[in-house]
Length: 209
Image (cartoon, rainbow, N blue to C red; front, side, top):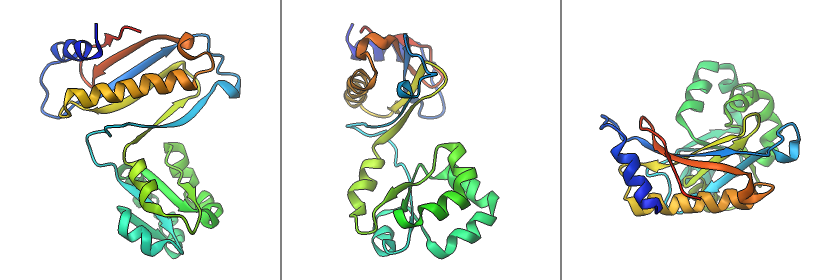
């Protein structure tokens, strides 16, 4: 069966909800010794059709402040770092609200020291960017990307968009994810036991590999 037919099957197995459910792709892996650091993954997948929602970006900036104000959803200045670091409740709120964090490279030691305990445990530690880089392209790419982590369990969950997206866009995202994982697993397709697609509250449907 085609990916489109599998999506149709997953829809049929999902009851209508009062919210737009997320399409999820689940990779169950095999022959992956995750005790070996080289087999663990911490990657970013650029989805060709995005996630169907606007991901929010933060830049912790100094010399990049003016450009960051044009393109980021939130800018934290160098001088605001200590104050925000003391307001744990506010920082936790921002960690929940914003998806992608970036920080000017010279500020990263301070950012790590002040924000690390909260952002690091949530997988939100800012990515370093050089002071003279053009931010627009980096932030636009982030808004269409998802993080992929493989650390302790041989299972990978990837959000691919929501059910309000046209099916053809979801199919393209699934195809991109399948290709990406085959390229980044040590033994490619041989490391994949099976792949499942489902809606948030729906029943799983196994894809044909």
